[in-house]
Length: 114
Length: 326
Image (cartoon, rainbow over all chains, first blue to last red; front, side, top):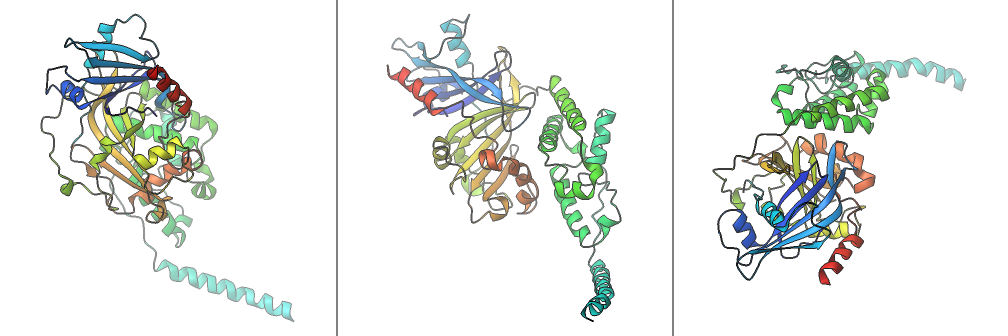
């Protein structure tokens, strides 16, 4: 289990081509930004945690998150822009930091009935 | 002399048993007759034959019961099993299920027959024809996989225009008294899963459950442990990622060994759709449906489907934390 600290779960995803599964965590400023309720990057903090996708040992046909592959962060920088770092693992091959930021920021928070 | 007296007693015993059985028939009830609303369609003939032979006698409205099944007290057990089976899956009302639900049901069918949980061993004992051979189990598996080979992605998430403003006081309540607990969204995510081409799920655990997982102390799970699984339709993004779309349901389990004795100490609840409609007509719904599948996980995970695999070991997370602290 991943310990996100003060950050809250925002959304998940999986990719069958890459065989990965990810969870995006963020603070309330990040959540508000992704929901479209604010436009400033101030104090935004996001963390994308990516795992290998593996067969569910308990249920045939299901896939679950397996081995931890990487942890990427996107944070508000001093110049009003967003900074990208990899805290663990490597940036996906062939992708730039700008692409990774764009990909992470293109996330809709999960939508619950209440 | 004693032997002679005993031999003379035998007819008397038989007569008593016969009279008793006849008397029981006055308390006999036939199974409720229900209409066929829609059969399963576009299924290969060999799969259809397996289902009809092994499953239909309980999981349908078209029973072909033997004379023996209709005699009390056997009929009481048969009627109870049929009522439970119909609630879980009914091949005579297959049209009531969405495509995604039908696909999900076939994964459930395969997992149950593969684990030897279905047909029920007690039923198979008296109905040996219902047993599935290894080849038939493989046939079910092949058909189930073929369903996922098709592009089953559901329509893109349209957004929820009018999010329901349900207050805590108006929270929906399961028939067994378990209320919808919206606070699960603040719990720790203990795992993610997907049924490919069907749904995407996020599993949350409360503090007690999280601690039990971290300490691998879940045989049994401590009272107060609670796990919530949020299920969503799938939406594909332009970069190929599959992400959660519309909310489907929230499945909830809470451990209380004293309150839920009939279901191995676990209380079950399921809240469906945007109005969070609770599953089940009576408080007995979990006994009649949920626990039968969860029992196959008794030894491995203490009845839960979504305990994180050990591959996400404490060692790996500690290694990550060391990297961050450098």
